[in-house]
Length: 363
Image 1 (cartoon, rainbow, N blue to C red):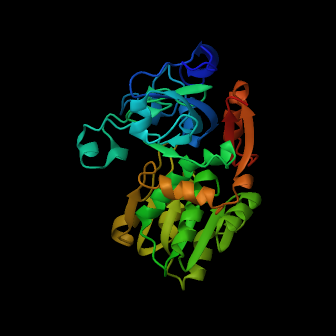
Image 2 (image 1 turned 135 degrees about the horizontal axis):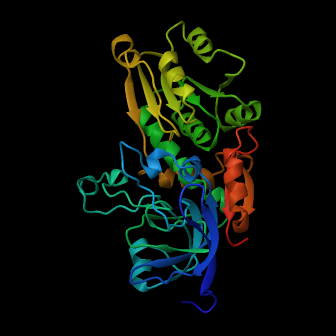
Image 3 (image 1 turned 120 degrees about the vertical axis):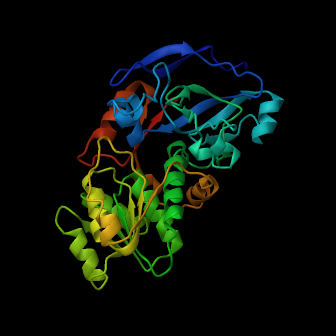
């Protein structure tokens, strides 16, 4: 350990759904090829909140085993400074002590069918920072293992802005899945962190018309500033009717779902044209039921999922470093580690009090 690195630190530890505790634990010691990061910022994701509240996707049900683990420190949207590591680890990741880095959420096994085919983001074991087998960043320090995918980030960005590279990379991957063309009418559902990333990514593809949907006027304004041509408050206006009015009755070409709201799924199926493309990014807290005949017999839709942000991290980091997003207004709340519960509660507040909430563990 380095001269100025303590032996003990504060960290959040998962003991089960709705049982996250701030504890004093040992600062991890990097082994051969591993690095030690001092965490600067960690964003709180909607999936963090759903895991906290015990969603079956994380903790299992009669149809699936639990995936998330107890005893793990949460937090997968993070940035920090490398403070320790051997020559092997520094060379492996192409970094130096003192560099600011972000890591992809997934820690791929590099041995399963998906990893061997280059599809690392769908890794079979699916180890992930903050959920399974690797501690996340709601702590003052964390290990960067040899299998981590590491990206350098400019030290000129505010920490909470730099940590936004994770949700932005995810949104950019969803946009890539949509194969947007110049003549497309694109609709984005939700102007939260993922939705705003979807808007920014879709804007970079320069479609004919880019429409943002939300229930909150302030978030819709943020969507407009991020690149939407038109915004629709779905609490006051029928989005399906409005989109069809704008498209000679046909409907949108592409629908990007980034809200995680159950009604947004049927909304998307209904406002798409025949042969349109639906891309789902959200993590839902409950099951979604729709009329699948819309997908098949009615419209022959192309429905695609999107998971994580493979191959989009360099683009996401560049967008942040180039100032392409109104990031100061996206990253609305920063709290110290001791107030992690406040951060979770802010993310869960459906009144629209926050957009992106971050924890600054060493503030």
